Structures are given as C-alpha cells and as structure tokens.
Length: 138
Image 1 (tube, rainbow, N blue to C red):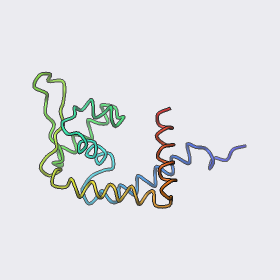
Image 2: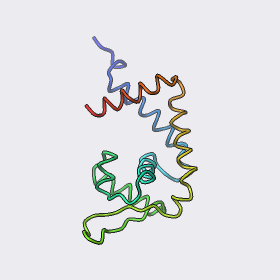
Image 3: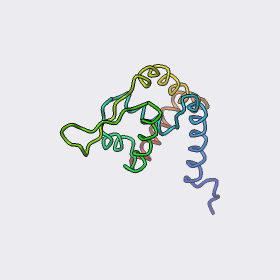
Image 4: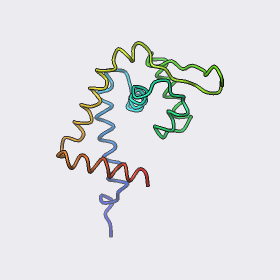
C-alpha cells in the first residue's frame, strides 16, 4: 500500500509550497506576488501582449489574469490599453516603473531560481526542469 508521502500529488504540492514561499518572501520588497512576477517576466520577454495571449502563455484563465492585471495596474507596473482596431482586446504595456526595475528584477528572479535549485547539481537541475515540463505538457 502506498504511503501518502509517496503520492506524487503530495510531493509536488509540498515542493510547490516551498518554492512559492521562497519567491513570495523575496518579492515582497517589490510589493508583488509570485503570479504578478510571472506576468512581469512574460512582458519583459515580449511587451505589448494582449491579455488573452498573456493568459495562454501563462496558462491562466481570464478571471484570474484579470485580477492580477488590475492589481499590477493599480501598483503602477503595467498599463492596460484597449486595442484601437478591436476594443474587446486588451494590450498590456510596461510602465516606466517596471522598466526601471527590469535588470534588478530579472537578476532577482534568476537568484531565486538558483536558490530553489541549489540542492541539485547542474545535470540534476536540467533533468528536473525537463521532467517537470514533460509532466506539465502530458
């Protein structure tokens, strides 16, 4: 009989809690949640994405993303603009504030990734990331 401690749901859930807490504590200095940080990272890769495209890339439903974007706009990280050709489409732009923090924020994100993965050697890190991506995509 399998122990609850060996159930993959339990293992991944507890690992997720640890990673989330690590990111959350470090991102508080920016006044940002881990989900908001992911949105900002995606926009640093490609600014001007529509809310719909952003939701697809981050695998978020529109209701969840809408709340995240609202809070980020209120905090001055992004600007939400209606598309001139289709008012139903919402384009997301970075603000001066988010551009000011770009390098610092990306370096902080990289440090957090390294911190979380520090128990593993380089090969283990690459393997873990690949296996988690494979699991996510199945």
